Length: 118
Figure 1: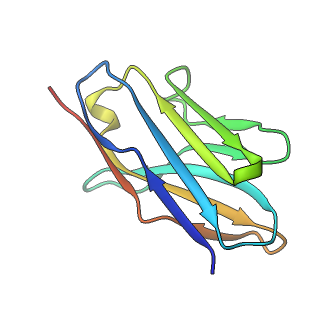
Figure 2 (figure 1 turned 90 degrees about the horizontal axis):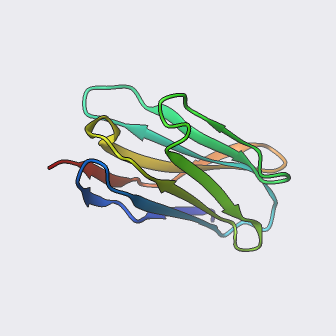
């Protein structure tokens, strides 16, 4: 059974940093991509960053480009999201997902809360 588990959320002041981690386990198949998404109260879930496992190419949401850095550790099926210069607009529940080969089926984690507040 595939599991996706996020960690690293918390409370941080504006301008601060947080690093999220995501581990995918339980799959013998390869992973095509791992992504970070977020959902703020009353808003739709939105893509933050998606990384292709084969070459590490990452597509970022415009509002986080230059502040957030996504990375992957292919051997351990782990993804990271380094978030710097956080603002109150970044407050949300952050979710990790993985597209598992060959079907590209998406598995989602339960989410980790990020709160940016003074």
